[in-house]
Length: 196
Length: 152
Length: 45
Image (cartoon, rainbow over all chains, first blue to last red; front, side, top):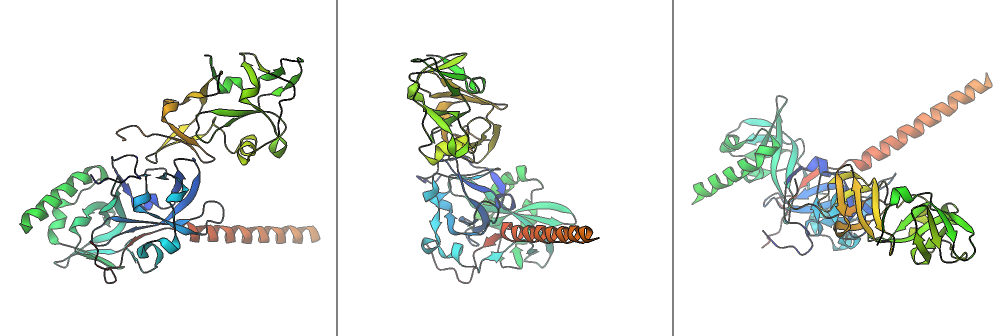
């Protein structure tokens, strides 16, 4: 487990990225809601969480000229994203490029295609593993009214329209979020086995 | 050391020891940002015109009446936090309980405090009792507490 | 008659304001999930 001086707890769990958007950002040292989560941004190759863009809290909820980088997150839960203090927010001028530019790929609604040409469904959510090194670990894919979970390690490529996965990704699809963690481990092990 | 309930203390009369004058009654508690100490109590007035007594000016916090050292202890708000408490924006009772992992645990139903120094001993909600050693801060949004280890 | 007209006007204005607020809040509240663009990524260690 990586060490981050900022994080207070090392244990982790799975959350849906769409549930994280709109959550308040609350300071541990003050109990104040400093901002609200707008977009969730992750690295399309290594899948690590890059950070969040923010809205102001309150009636008008305009864009906040600050962002929250993954290193400064103390916790991501069902009800709030926690930071140590409001100094954990980064000004736009000092923020990493992916959190400032608007050329990120919106993956929600992407068509999921296996590399042998089969359409598996549509992306309805991204599953984030919280903890010391938060990362996108899976996609929730909907087809024919049912949801399945595909690990991000299965991803070959992603754009603003499509998500391409190898054919064997379908073997490790989990049907519920709780069981998904186990299938992620299985797929990683399988990938390592094939490459060695 | 005497430990009392914050909820039961609301409305208690405040009487001056030196001249027996009734100074007011407990309207609100002003809890420090640490969430672990009562700094002042609001004894009169409303909003920006609220009047406060410092905890150090209270001689004894009885089960029926609170005794103040002198009759002239009432002060106006010194900080935004005083006013926020008087307006009900930052209060321990009823505060949302939020842990450092980002999970809520209901709202504060009552708090126990030490009458000698105003320190909070514990807070309680329908989810259980939380010792003050786990309290990180109290703000307008929530009472932040350390998460259980491990969290589920 | 006049009172009726005024009442209707007030209702219309309130409805318009309400719709305006809801629209503004809806636009700003909506957040999404973005993957960094693959082509413009610089090599990182």
